[in-house]
Image (cartoon, rainbow, N blue to C red):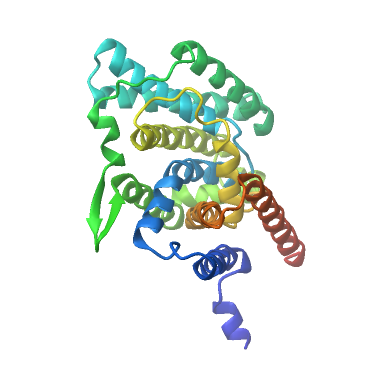
Length: 319
């Protein structure tokens, strides 16, 4: 019995998958259209932007930090890449790189304020959230950018798999998760992220500079926000200055539901993908049932509290 227990994954890793299975079973029984390839493809398209943002958020939370600016930084990146292409005729690939460079720059600023000035991540990213929002509105003139090159919307196109149309952006999201999962699990740099989240002082004593790891994590998270910017443009076909105002909370929700500890050092990035899909499944299923969006937010909030409670109890049990 003890040998079997050792082989089983921790509850924090199994929980998101179990929640996903339960949600799918409930909505499959209560709605007729839930179990269809087209509906599942739609769910993945709806979560692909938040899903990619959640990769960067996971990396930061693994270091015991948090990023409240991610959604607005993503929105700024989408406005930069679309306006540069539309207003100045910059080739679309170069415009996309400019947008990602801007989001990476915000990651660098967040990282420098956290590592050099030792400001709390919550305060730093709350400030850069407002800065990114203001810059987005000023630069765009609060106007949607409607002239978007085909290159920027290509990831929103679909291709058939077994009679179901799957978006290229969905495939990209899954590939990014697999790549980051491998990096965290199999490389020294990835394991340093966990080490810093567990105990930064012990990490320093073994010769790993925690400030450098933290700075790299924030910049890398910024790059993922930039990729999410491109996915947002691809999904809706415009550069929307009003986007990103709730994606920060959605990304944190996905990470928490995915089993990553808010206290740092514990979690699997693939869990964040499952967490994002759980939220997508809940909203989709409740919409099919005709449930008001207010109750969807209520249920999501309850799930977040339950997830954090489970994490806290598991921490106490491990002491």
